[in-house]
Image 1 (tube, protein in one colour):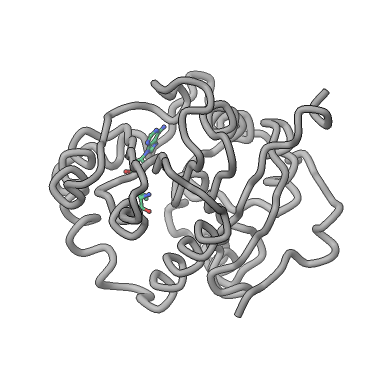
Image 2: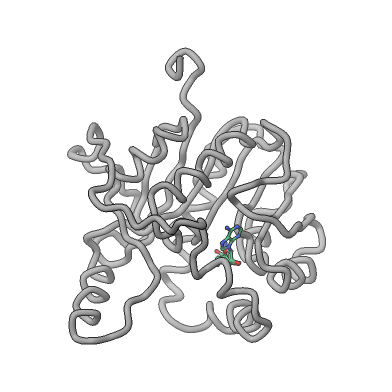
Length: 240
Ligand SMILES: C[S@@+](CC[C@H](N)C(=O)[O-])C[C@H]1O[C@@H](n2cnc3c(N)ncnc32)[C@H](O)[C@@H]1O
């Protein structure tokens, strides 16, 4: 059930071959969730259709990753949406803050998880001091971010505000879902704004932001693109 990083990826760290960098740093997911109807769909209906088993497993991997980090008293849930992850990880006396660029998502998160604090903001410019949180979670954002430079910018900000570890998800290339999407696009289906990258590329991006990959686990390896990754800041000595 617990899939460790394959040996071939263990050492490899690879810059992306092609860059799809938007000049103003904007991408569709920043705007997509701003509408009431999309927020309502995401909150009320998105997780009662599709693969519920995989969604449940994603949450289980996430909780497991957090449980492995000892003494966590504050968590930032970045790109918190309507509070799905915050709801799953709140409790245990932790201070939980959620941040999302969409005010309608934040409004829903406040109603769904009254015990946490939610703010509107951008992952690229976090309104928090350095080392403000023990842990940062960032679930289902990076695969919407189309360029390596933009992902590194977000990882940089996560690195700045997190003291201990970050738990992020990304879409890893090569899974059945990835091939199916590419096949459909070749047959004329409109391209989706989801980005699948090799683990080696995430490793390179994380390293550029000052992180090392501590563990990487697939929600359903070879079938689903979704991977849950724990990042730890490189020690000051190594960075120097
Ligand atoms: C697919 S939803 C994921 C929500 C939540 N993490 C979850 O797993 O249920 C993506 C979220 O990212 C937010 N988002 C997109 N770009 C963002 C940015 N630059 N800064 C903060 N939030 C962003 C969207 O508003 C949306 O709520």
